[in-house]
Length: 113
Image (cartoon, rainbow, N blue to C red; front, side):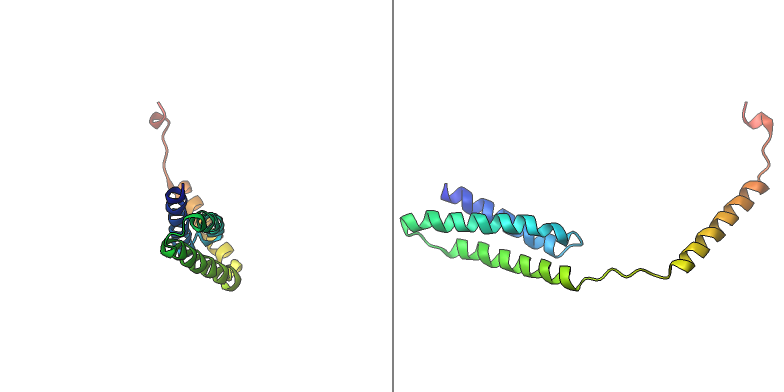
């Protein structure tokens, strides 16, 4: 049981770290919390047998790194909206160009038959 909890803790912690450094950092909290819970369960299970706690400490280290990165990115990541007037102007120009191209096409009735 302890080995299963440690393996699941490692998987969750690594997944949290990977998600923390990608643009999907906002969902890194989920595997981070799961890794913390599994780490606490692993500590509880290892207290009964007095086994080595190095792997459990590694789970906590990875989880803390992932949660710190995710929190940092959540606080300091700003979404910048560009000049929307320019975007609207370009969109209107491309729409006008498309209309001009369609008007310039010669379509015969024989093309549809």
